[in-house]
Length: 106
Image (tube, rainbow, N blue to C red; front, side, top):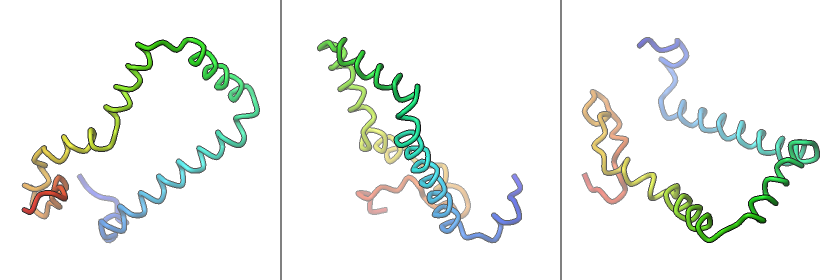
């Protein structure tokens, strides 16, 4: 796969940092738009209606299912398989070893 001309000379760390900044800015701006602008129109009223509906129809089984789903989405649960998996990037020439975990010494 051929890279774009700009990607050939930009160091990978700088490219990664720049990409993270762009993703952060897009997320923050989308959150501000939803929280400050859309919360006062039909979208916000519908969102509040859904919140009230879930609160009115709460059961122990649904609370338990929500608890398990939240536990499954926590950072250690998501990161552990990635750290345990031997990354193919370690085998590639110049691979960064992206699956290296903080507790592994090698």
